[in-house]
Length: 399
Picture (cartoon, rainbow, N blue to C red):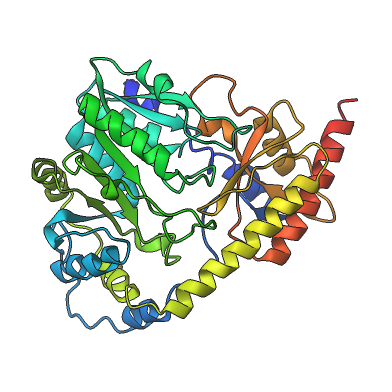
């Protein structure tokens, strides 16, 4: 039998989805699973989006342009202008979700063997996309004790060598909820300029910032406009994960031309998704405010509840809708699997993402989990209660 590729062997499993078979088996046993593992918002998509979806008037569902519909890209310019990001429609390429934007950025900017530096813990699929491009991610650890703030410049510079081609950040961060400060973004800007690196900046959670600190986009940084590749998506801001519409944004025409080759090879981004996404740009301020306020309440509920459980600690996330929590266990992979395979309390259990999958440094995050607060506050409270019971039983069985 022929062997599969080395690339496929190296491809990591998703820490978010790898426990799905255990969750499905639990549900088949009649256990209610509280899903804290995945960033699938339960809030409704904008009414404008649903009206557009229900009123698609086409006789043929055709290919769209490879870079996306111009009307949508032009309308996006107005959206970004609200954040002081000044773009032309040609600076924007519509992709099949933010994931494709990351993949095409790597494929266009990195050669096999090239390296990029990423603060960890980091969104697990970055590693998968780097492997797909034949590139290598070099991680630099941030700590839960420091609230996952940016490591110092000298720690980055120890990793920079002749193969280093870029730095990747997620701001606000998935999985930690950290928001980079103006000072930290300026430190990144100086490194990018000094070493002439790409700055890949995933900014899909900009709507969800829960602090008075300003949102500093990579596009706000001076003198590195040609180095910046911004990644975006409508999945989270409009609760539209399923329409698979993202964007790759850069002022660098050479990069855009390269990305377009990959776009043409996959033909086009989703037709229906773009129709829905374009309509979503008309979502009211009330809709956006209601979503924001709901996530603030959920964040406060979750963090307060986590830190009341004996032995559990979570810093306060300043953005997105995730947190990394430290648990009083030695192996969160084992604990998370056990919660689904061997534990239930009053017919309920919890599903979380083991944080080890968000690190590449061996043994990092072994006692941590990522939790997404994308369910109603009442369910979060119940899930926290179940988590507390699970920790009691899990640790008592080892005594």
